[in-house]
Length: 298
Image 1 (cartoon, helix red, strand yellow):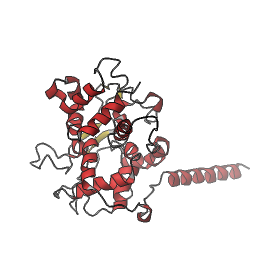
Image 2 (cartoon, rainbow, N blue to C red; image 1 turned 60 degrees about the vertical axis):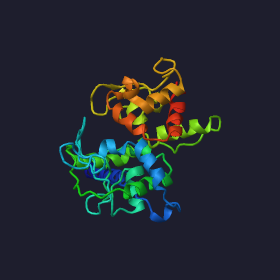
Image 3 (cartoon, rainbow, N blue to C red; image 1 turned 90 degrees about the vertical axis):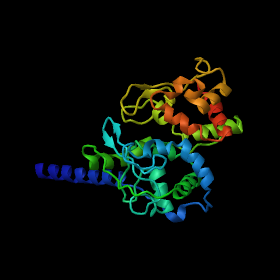
Image 4 (cartoon, rainbow, N blue to C red; image 1 turned 90 degrees about the horizontal axis):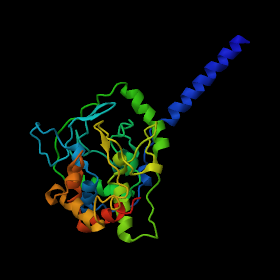
């Protein structure tokens, strides 16, 4: 009887382990499932800027590399270890030059590398996963238009990396968010702003608190939270007008465009300086759209 019980435990444990391994496996995009799309590099450039890609993927300042190109390598210190954002220029050997469209979509929207590894979500693919696939392909088209830079990747300095990456397969199933749908009761500008903020802009990734599983708490979206690098708190984006941070949506749009140069000092703190400078590169209509949306958060 005891032997049968132990055998049952072993069988159950093996089945559970196999189930967890299956559930945590990386899911790949089938090229045939991608929409027929003529990539628009100009739209990709806009989304690249709102996505703040250069803020994470720039080279180290002392490397001598062109700081305007996303060749990666600058350490990104997090509570779980140090990450080194990779080269996303079109270099075939060390960048994304040899990536297929499906591989790029996998990385950006599903957090899966071309080699099948789960990417650590300092890369905000939970938010990028809410984007239109066509927009993701437009970003790739823009990146492929940049000069190629040879910059070999550096592995993450994270303890038990394999275990962490494998566990992310399960985490993604809980953290995943639905696509962004237009709100028919709101203006076209508001809907554009909602898409830019919640998708490519990934503002919620820093400005939303997380639960014990490190999943964004949607009930407290944009209410502020711990700084991702462990440096204090990220402020709330709720009720910016009511709290007199800005007088109205137009004032917020001006702040997003001008930042510290326009004497909006609060937009230069805690990493927001880089964010503001990226937003300033957007068309005025998109900056106003972002302000229209943010000014309605309660």
